Length: 115
Image 1: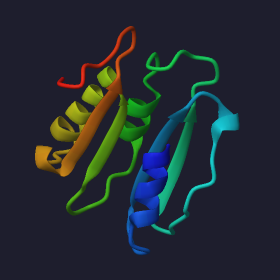
Image 2: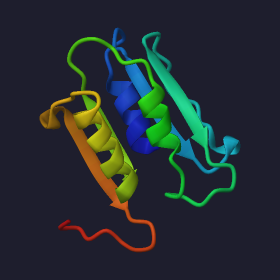
Image 3: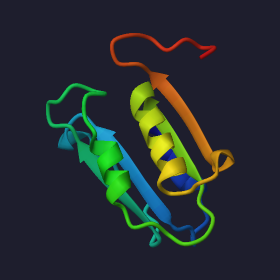
Image 4: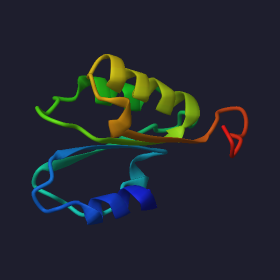
């Protein structure tokens, strides 16, 4: 969440986009910078184990997509990030070079620093 908040703080006032944040439950919704052209969608798991839902992929897949060049920043559970990246490249036509991604952790194990 700190990285998302920082990115929102650094966006220009006229930025357009979507932010999707999966959280443990509704109590974890935080106050972040609001921009008129950026929607923030909180996706509470409400008791479901981290990395065990398709909340993020479903939300991104269903989102209205802007025209023009798109940049995506992805971070989270490794398999979820991989699925999101594949969707953005294959289904949304985003260039690989326009996606910054990090699988911070892996469900059922650790992510190696060199992977």
